[in-house]
Amino acid sequence: MDVSRRQSIQLSAGALAALSAGALQPSAAFAQGAPQPDKLVEGRLRTIADLPLNPDGSAKEFSEGEAGPIDGALWKTKGPPDIEFDYRKMKVKVDGRGTSILSGTLAFSDLEKLPRHTQITLLQCGAPKPRGIVKWTGVRFSDFAKAMGAQSFANYVRLTASDDYYLDEDMKTMMHPQVILAWMANDKPLPPENGAPMRLVVPFRYGARSVKAITAIAFTATSFPPQKGWPA
Image 1 (cartoon, one colour):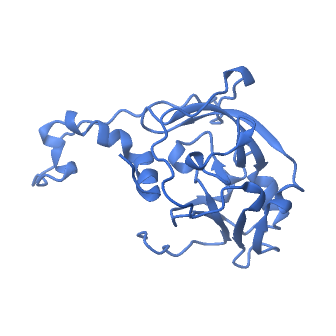
Image 2 (tube, rainbow, N blue to C red):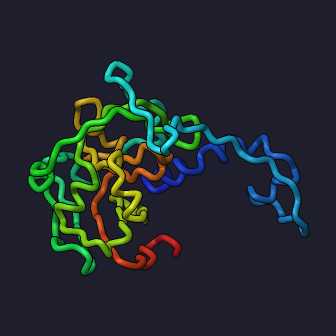
């Protein structure tokens, strides 16, 4: 069954809950739409796949021989594209909101000036799939932020996908050396189903935190307003 891009990203975060809904105890069934009990009851916790993290919280890195395709993508592109998939032609809106020197439209030629970075890490959803050890190529987000002139008071980042799905993250997390903006996977351009033309990779978080098909990046000092179509 084909699903929309937005539905697929929501599924990426909640697929395991849907898969396990049939196994829920009656006392927890209200979470799936049944009447809510009039008192607190014990429910069955869903099982989340563990991420193989290092003691310092960073993601484990793998050898090139272990890299391979992502298994079990939850969606596929259908119909005419709603975004330019060729990373060499991408246009990404950058909004500094008064916290970065540069704002405007980011092109691949701007990213080419930054140090190229490659890492081989696991992409793991909270559910068993999608999953895969992938060789990602792009630039570190920290290098991108410095190139934009992000100031010390730029405390938060918002990344928006082509369907207006967005992620708000604190700058400290985004400046981790394993957080990258990637346009290649396993030495090939990202395919549309895996986030072309460019996606975020946060290997020490579950896959739903790695926004696909990025169209806008914004910095702010305090907080962002709700985005159209999404709650606060």
